[in-house]
Amino acid sequence: MQALQLTAWKSPPEVREVADPEPAAGQVVVEVAAAGACHSDLHLIHDFEPGLLPYELPFTLGHENTGTVAAVGPGVEHLEVGEPVAVYGPWGCGRCRRCHEGAENYCERAAELGGAGGGLGFDGGMSAYMLVPQARWLVPLGDLDPVEAAPLTDAGLTPYHAIKRSLHLLVGGSTAVVIGAGGLGHLAIQILKASCSAQVVAVDLKPEARELATSVGADHAVPSDASAADAIRDLTGGKGADLALDFVGVDATMALATQVTRSLGHATVVGIGGGSFAFGFFTVPYEVSLATTYWGSLPELSEVLDLARRGLVRAHVERFSLDQAPAAYEKLAAGEVDGRAVIVP
Image (tube, rainbow, N blue to C red; front, side, top):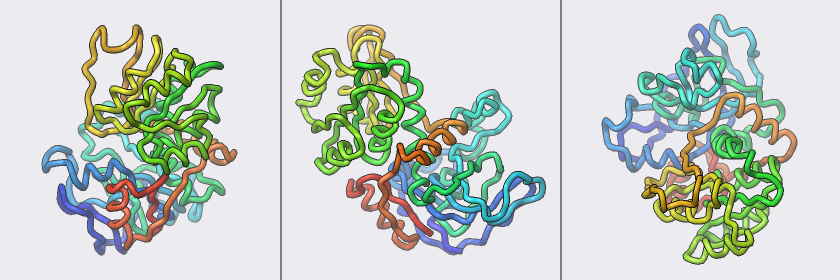
């Protein structure tokens, strides 16, 4: 079969011929229906030097995956061939306390595993078939459109986790700010509207992204420029935001997030743009909590998919064939994808 593989660091991926996977005991082979192209993949392709990550090359890209069960290994009893599934992305050891809680995204032995999941050190879903080493990483998909559901395994799950930890702040009269209304941000807006009564303000450089933000439920969308902080203060009656979610993660957006968060609020950085913020006693209002988050838990993926089944969350996708996957990453790098790029092998 053909697969889109990363064969060298700081090099574009290649479509290559690889062997079809065969499941061993406890393993499952999934016939891939869709694999999301994530902005974080661009760091693998363009930025990371050899030796920075404990990943062995080559491996197949694609860590947002859906499909149907094609074959099961000995000992797998709760899955049937032909069953639609979503693949939980962060693969933990399964033995530590975090993994026992379903939070494999925070596995305590992650550094020992040689990869973070399928498409991140291990073979992912940008191929006809994908080997899933543990059956527990498969979640029933039901009748959801697999192409629209694939991004929910990361682009939906990641903002869901970030929002859930701050839901107690998002009561009537509160405000949540979403900085970056792209692949994750447009889903974060929908999750916020489905989960709480907060006013939602989107911030983005691109007029198209601001239009998408309001179309999926944002109450306001403001340009990401020097006037953004004042605009947010005006929209909140001078109080500021109870939660600011930064889906970009560069210096300027981190500064904006902390600048507009009110006392006792949360400023959460989700984007991995490489920025930093000089945190000190006088740099943020009193009791502002500054945090980063990474992906989400296995139970939370089921919750995200349930929101989608109820019609409350839907990913806006642009579809590409496997042969078009390298071009999809080029469009993603150029900022020319509104919503989420999805490869359909």
